[in-house]
Image 1 (tube, rainbow, N blue to C red):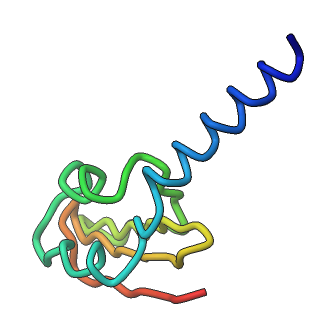
Image 2: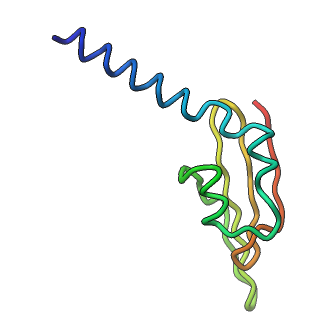
Length: 91
């Protein structure tokens, strides 16, 4: 019984790895376009993004988010809610 449960967990973990493999590769990086909003970026990269920094200066808000795993990471800067810059790091 325990062996079957362990096997199901392993299969489930492999499914999750397969689902996200390459999620932060160059192809996904290229899908992020200047002017997109956070919802659009999240649709491409998933909801696992982490807030790196946020600042407000007068009426302008800057937010930096990062998505990443063992395949690399993508950082996106939002200026007043829209993508203004992006960068990619490989492992």
